[in-house]
Image 1 (cartoon, rainbow, N blue to C red):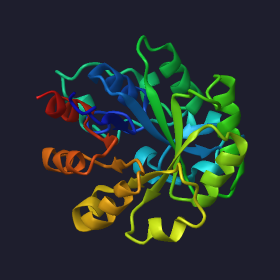
Image 2 (cartoon, rainbow, N blue to C red):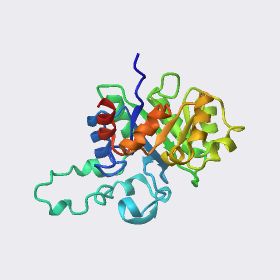
Image 3 (cartoon, rainbow, N blue to C red):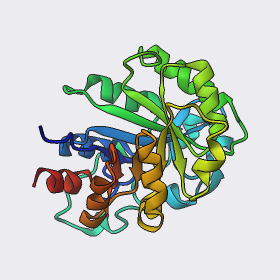
Image 4 (cartoon, rainbow, N blue to C red):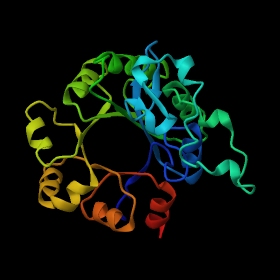
Length: 262
């Protein structure tokens, strides 16, 4: 029997093609056949979870303000897509962009998009820390997942974080959710093991596979699942396949799927 191929997870949507974390990026990723969607979540000043990576808006919305200091209605006035294609308005052949798809994306709307999609799609949701709201982020996340019936067994969602404290909060609030501990240092896994639980998934960056393959092999030999970010080339994908990676998180879901099918 052929081995099961790794799950292809669209990193902030199809973010090589469209502005990250916009509805446009996620719709393209779904159309390309992504198995799952990855997003980062932050809490606004009025308590809404929004899909934004950076703590401030300088890179994605050209604003010198913090996401946590703004209300949702303020964020909705901003264009989160223009930075990706700054010359689009001068291109007569470019398709008309839907401004609604380049607004700030709430996690609620992303969950609804997945719930309404005609095939099963999973979600990998990263909570960002440190933040002024601390554990409130995880509490709001679990409450929202619960509204969709996705906080228990069989949920299509899993929660990721570089913070083991955040993951332990999720375990207390929703014991059945799958948890991914993200790592960008070769020491992270060893430091966290006494504080983690046996079923946690390891989430190393691709550079850890490249520079510390023996560490990754030890993690796999212990029976731990691997979800790797950010995998954007054939060489990186082959390395993931060699290490038995279960999920590859990529800016280019179409490319990764084409490689796997080939």
